[in-house]
Image (cartoon, rainbow, N blue to C red; front, side, top):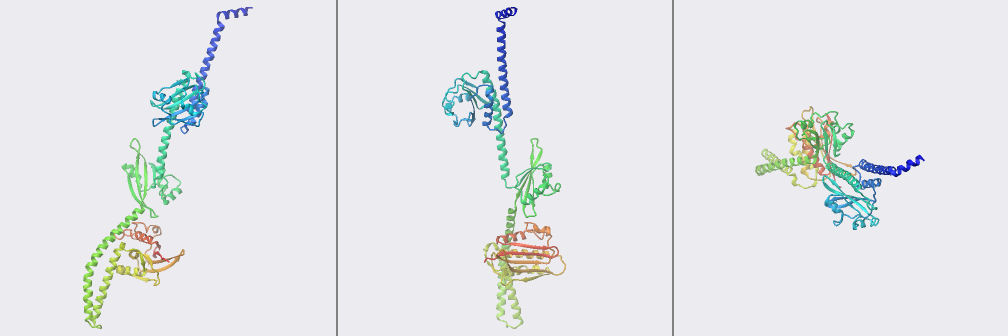
Length: 549
């Protein structure tokens, strides 16, 4: 009875009603707190899950799956501005039809121009959504359009739609705006990442596309980057090296090079260069360029190599051509100045010889004058012919005759060094198609080198010149071989002897061009020059030329 009375009093005084309202309000607030927590969790989860290498479709897909925990969401779309046009870039659910660019008549452009979020309830169903999908037509009842703002500039729009009317109160709209802000930052980061990645990729592709070897080396001689265009000779060293130091990777050394130009770069803070000739004959121009940081301190050096082997060969040919042109002018002048008096001497001697008895002493002396004059004219003519070699095409050439012409020009120079010349010519030697004057140049180089190799040796000095043929690989070859019993060539120098400007002679006695030019002539004729040498026993050089069958 007492309990019933108390209950009646509570009901009359509204105590129970207040408790009910309190619990209902508390429940409502708890639901709001849970919903708000869900929203914060969604934003936090999206920020945590989104990677800079994700696509925009993946980002919208992740957001679309999470949003139903916080608000009603039946549609989500992302539009981006590009070149003052609005493009639907991603949407969920995914529809096959995308209207791009968005027509200017669409209500979406109003949000872009104002830069403010807008709620459409009910949605103005223009042709845009009707064409997106029949599924949306007439069913999308509420839509929030929020601009994506980066640095006070609208970059696009975020669309969130529901099939329920009045689905988006100010709290939901505010949450969607916060979500749009986070998505805008993520999208901006992704775009920046793509730009940086694109620039990095373009730079790397450009770096690798350069055919010259380029390396980036830090101040501790460590190779940071290489475009893998190194010459084969250096590449082999690079593969064998077990460290990433430049002196090991490039030059096969175990310590810094004595003449390392990086030290000079560090001191002068200016680019430096030098020319290097490898054992294989490759000629490289090597340049070092300093790389500075924002404090103007050197942090690395760009190491650039340029293969100038062919350029060097062309320079050699130009030098040789210039020399021959000068010799040609001189020879022409000598021929003109000497031929006239020689003609008078020979003609006068022949006239006197006719008036002299054939068996007299005067006739013998006059005959010597005539023969010597004719020999002088032949030498002058050979010199003139040799100096004008560029004017002669490839013709059938007798190598034995070319040997005789060469010996007539330089036999005196060889004989005065007390050197014996031995000839062993194959009388059945076939003709070759060649420029005879260029072959004379090769033979002269080989004979003069043989003479120089005999200087300073004791005993008999001998040069043997031999012509012969051989069959190799089903093809017939003609050979002109020059042998000497001189000092020979050091084994480590043999690979270098055909390199331009390489010489073991004194500066006043050689330029290092003879064998290089000779090999170029031989190769231009489809042949080569073979060499064999033994220290202290002499050398053998053979000009090898193909014989046309």
